[in-house]
Structures are given as C-alpha cells and as structure tokens.
Image (tube, rainbow, N blue to C red):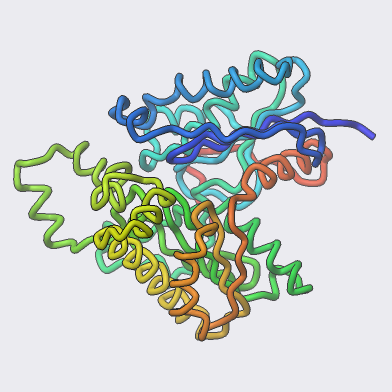
Length: 361
C-alpha cells in the first residue's frame, strides 16, 4: 500500500495547528498558541504570514521531518469568493486572491499561502479542503434586507461538516438524511443548519453571537454613527469586530479558561459576559431551528470552547427542548484536511481548480 505523507496546516484566530499524517495515521501534532500581545504587533492578519510560516518550519525541524518526505501539503481554506465543498488545488489565481484581494481578513487566508510556498519548491501539490467560503445556501437565505449587502456563507465549514458527518454516523444514518444544527465555538463562532447534505443557512461570525475576540452582531444604526464619528479609522473599526471585540473588549482577554477562573473567584462582570455568550449562542441555535421548521435531529456543539462544561451547560438549559445535544468538543479540522487530501491523492476525489470568477447554482 502506498504511504502518502501529508502535512496539514490550520491557522486559527489565536493559534496555528499543525499535524503530520501517514495516510490516515497521525504521526505528530502541535498547537502553537499566539497570545494577544503577540498578535497585537501586527496591524493586519496578512502581516502574520512570515511569523506563522516560520512556526510551521520550526515544527518540522523540531520533529526531524525532512521536507522531501512530504507527498502533499493541505491548508485550511480562506475567505475566497464562493466555492464548493471539498478539495481545491492551490494555484496562482488562489494565491493572488488571498494575498491581494481576499473577501475579508481572516487567519485561514494564510493556510493556502503557507501550503503553497512549502509545496511548490518540492514539486508536490498543495490543497485546501472545505474552505471557509463554502457556499451551499438556499436562495431565500441570501436576502439580507439591502440589495448591495447580500448574505454570504463565510463560516467554519471544515469543522462543521466534519462534525455533522460524524454525528450522522453516530445516528447510523446517511449525512444527507439528517437535519442538524452545528455550532462551532472557538475564537470565532459560527453556526449552520444542515439539510439534505447541505448547509442551507448559516449564522456567520459577524451576524450572530459575539465570541472571545469578535464583536458579532451589533446595533447597525449605532455602528453607522460610530463609523462616521471621526474617532476611528476603518482599520480600527474592523479590528473592533475581529481581534479586539467580544470578551477582549469586555474583559481584556480572549482566554475563556481565564474568564471561568475569574467567575470562580467571584468576578460579577466575567459572569455576566460569559452568561451573555451562552445566551447569544442559544438564541442563534433557536434562530436556525426555524429554518428546519423545528424538525432537528441533533444540535451539535463543537470547537475549542465546547470543552467548557459551564458554557455548554448554560446553552443546554436553553435549547435542549429543541433537540438532543451532541457534544463534540475540540476540532477535527486537521483530520478533515488530511483525509480530504488523501482522497485526492488516492484518486477517490478530484480537486477542483480555483477560478476567481467561478459562480455556481
């Protein structure tokens, strides 16, 4: 049997996760945290590129993994124009899009870039899988209330689809025959409604709950006034939404374990903000339940902060009447990336070529 050695890279808002696989067997994994102080040195996420690429190369050197042993490199897909679910080969068009005109700033934009820069000199393929920009929305879900601001599907698609498929297996039913609500709870929080094997509606991290470092949905009239107040630049406003919002804005930290410790020590503000986080997550789940007409097989809570019994307990109290809760804490993103790349290498799946003007029905 051919052994394919696959390097998987997942840049997240507060960490870079890396793993090496021989086929489906994980050989080594590491999560490299990036502190708030470290990230504040960079005015834009793209400025973090060299720092994060160096971390990946240091990881390989520390574990004595020669680059020439790699068969492929796969990175988390970034904020591209709408793409399909599954694998895409990283090509110059994708690199140009992510470097020069991404849909928005996001740490995942760096995944394809790092993968490409490592793979090309070696003559091996670089892929992305289940990009943040996977768009399977039903048409009615695209209407926002203003024609120039259509709703877009920009979510944690990789972990969401992996969690949904895993939940369907636990139910002993095909994924396309289940009706699920999946909430990814991490540095950013997004949610999706799954029906007929598609994510037919979503709540992205800028239109729903706040998160450890993101502001989420805020009052739009007050926001418009703030934008034109002259107090802030556009870049400063954007940083309020991504990087300096949510728990960072209220409590000065993006570390939910620190928030819980402060609650245990009797900090009333920490308790209020953490309860509000659970409250808003539950409200988003209720919103998506209406999309599925209340017929929900499971509510899936996944992502890093789904490890919190305190937070998930508060969520459970508010939504378990809708459907049973499936707790899948942590992220299956590295496994999903490597498995997707392996299917392509084995010829079981075909990687698409990215074309920026691509549109599909």
